[in-house]
Image (cartoon, rainbow, N blue to C red; front, top):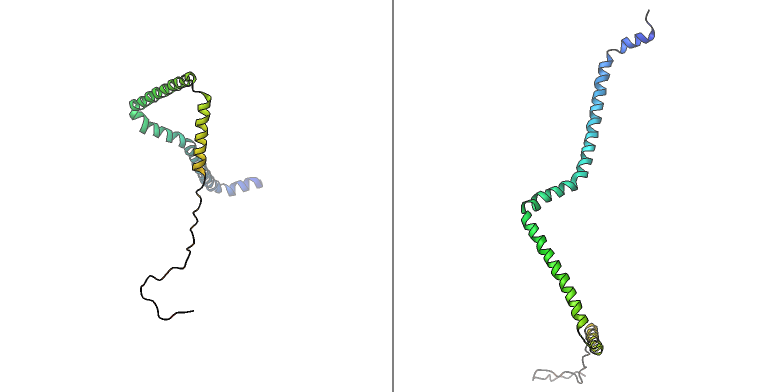
Length: 145
């Protein structure tokens, strides 16, 4: 005689294949969703790197010699600028300008700045002393009082 367990197993043995196919479909859908999520995350993480690589490949790599030339020119400009700053500092230290003249020049400069920064005063128009006369030679014979 069969036990109840064996009877149940026999009855549901045909449903095993159906359950397996359902399980495979669900797992495949979940795996696809997870794959899409990970793919989007990788794309978002790699986006700045990809932009940098595209920038490097399209703009810098083809014109390497030009960029190196620009770098050399800028280094020469910085070196000349630094040398000029040192020379100008030495010249200022060596020049014997009396402090009184410097103070006078600063005062003039401040006066000019104050003059330029003051707002212009509005001009007041003078009122006419008498009423305006008629411009035509013909006068009206009727006078209104």
